[in-house]
Length: 204
Length: 204
DNA sequence: TGGGCCACTGACTGACGTGTCAGTCGACGC
DNA sequence: GCGTCGACTGACACGTCAGTCAGTGGCCCA
Image 1 (cartoon, rainbow over the protein chains, first blue to last red):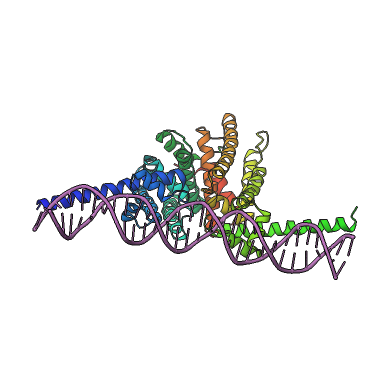
Image 2: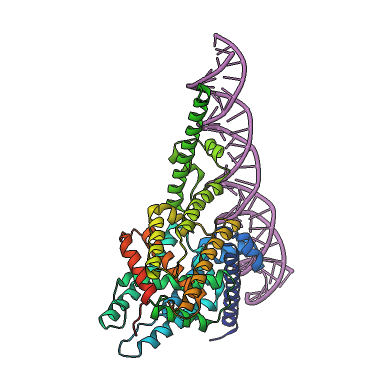
C-alpha cells in the first residue's frame, strides 16, 4: 500500500477536497452578504478565484451549494441539543443546552445569518426542509416541557406555545447578533436567555 | 357643484381606486402564496383580471406594490402600540397591548405572512426599512422595560435583551399561526404570551 | 516524445420575467 | 356623426444570469 500511484491519488483527492472547501467558503460569504437571491454564481466563483465551469464540477447548482451549507449547520445544531435528565440538576442542564446552541450559532456567524435570513423563499422544497427541522426542535422541546410540567419544574400552561416562544426568543437574539453587529458576549446572552425562561420579564 | 361633469369625474376616480384595490389584493394573495421572489407580475395581473400594462399604470414596479402592502401594515402596527402608564393597572395594559397587536396581525394573515417571511431579501433598502421598524419597536419596549425595572415591576436584567426575546416570541408564534395553519384562538395566544412574560417557563 | 488523463476555463446559450409602448375601444362632448 | 380622451391591452424588446461544453494546459507514464 502507499505505492507512488496511491500516494498520488490521495494527493489529488486532497486537492479536490480543498478546492471544494474554498468554493464552499466563498459561497457562504457571498450568501451571507447578499442573500440567496441576490447572490450570483459569478460572485462566488470570483471570490473563490475559479472559473464559472469549475463551480459546476463540484456542485450540482446554486441551490445545492446553499443547501449543503445549511445542512451542515442543521446537523451540528441537532447534535448540540441534549435531552434533559430530570434526575439531575435540571436548571444547569437547561443552561448547558442554551450555552451549546448559542456557542454553535455564534461560532460561524455568517452561516447562521444565512440560516436565519436567507433560508426562506429559496425554493418550496427547501422551505419545507427548514420548517420541518424547526418543527422537530419544537416538538422535542414541547415534550420536555410537558414532562417538566408533570414534575412541577415547568410552569403550567400551553407547552407548545412555551416551546414556540422559547425558540422565537433564541432566533431573534441570534438575528440581532448576526445581522446587526451586536457584540454581546456569549455568556451575557446565555444568562439573559436563561433568566428570561426562568422568570419572564414582568414581576407583577 | 356636483354638476354632471363633476359627478362623472368622481365616478371615474372611484373606478380607478377600485381597480387599484383589486390589484393590491391580488398582489397580497400572490406574495403570500409564493413569496416575493417567486411571485411574478404575470401571476398578479392574471389573478386581478387585468393586462400586464394596466399593472404599471397603477404601480411603479413589483417592489413598489410590495412595499405599499407592507407599509400599510407597519403603520397600523405602530398605532396598535400604546405606552404603558405606570400609574394605572400595568399588567392589564400590557395584556391589552398584546391583544391589540395579536388581533391586528391575525386580522389579515396573508399580509402578516408577507411581513414575516418575505420581507427579507427583497432589496437592501427595503431590508433596512423593515429592520429599522422593528428596531424602533424594540427601543420603545426597552425603554418601557427600563422604567419598569426602576419601579420594580419588571425583572432586573438586560432590558434590551428582554425586549428582543419578547419580540422574538411574538414573531415566532405569529409565524406558526400564519405560515403553518394553526388555528388557536386569539385569546389563547394572548394569554399564553402574557403568561410567558409574567413567569417564563421554568419554575425552579 | 508523444499521448492520455483530468482539472480547469470562460465564451456562449437559452430561458425567464420585467417593463414598454404602439395601438384598441368605448364613453362622452360637441 | 366626428373628434378627443384616457383606461386598458398584450406582443415584444431587453437585460440578466444559471448552466453548458468545446477547448487548453500541465502532469505523468510508456
